[in-house]
Amino acid sequence: MASRVHQISVKLSAYVANLDNNIIRVIESKTVSDKLIILNQQQLLRNRNVDGSLLRHESTGKTTLTKAYAKITGKKRPNLFETGLHFDGIALSVFSMAEYSMFFKLSLSPDAEFYGKFFSGNYGGNIYGIAKKDSPKAQRITHKAIGQDLKIKVFKR
Amino acid sequence: MLVGQESINKDFFLGWNYKEFEAYVKSAKLKTGISILELAKKLGIEVPKKEKDELK
Image 1 (cartoon, chains in turn cyan, yellow):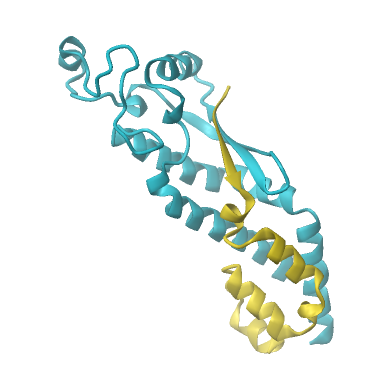
Image 2: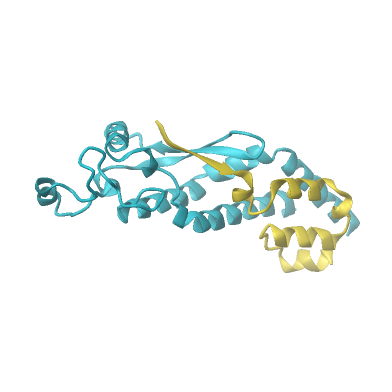
């Protein structure tokens, strides 16, 4: 047993020595980033921004679509996801000893860059990201994924 | 194109205070199988029963 304990301790130390890279690899993985992107999509489907308030058009100051646009789309409120705000992944970088900067990668589709700028211009920058309401869900996703990764890297024989 | 920069605490991803985690791993506490199992539990790692029995 002593040798197994030693083996696990050595692997765990190596994992911790490279903790930032390990966390970045796990969060940027397709499995995890897809789940975080779905949280953002759900927030957009609720017509909400990251702080939980209804999306408000910067020029009109309204949370509802104009009558003309509502007639075209058949919707009362803006839905940025259905309109074309799609992401391909998450990018994470070290910001400080205790923090990371997280970004959403806009889809490489031809319209993505247009929509990215268009929506930010019309609805402000806080449409991207994890809503405060979804923070516990996001933490469960990342915590579980890092646990799974540690299990593979450290406990696998 | 990257959008929506957000600062996220390392503890958020780890689900545990990272300094505490690093200190725990670096300390001599990991010299027993029980301590390894305690750490695994804190990190949400499901240790297979066979391994668990071996480390106890």
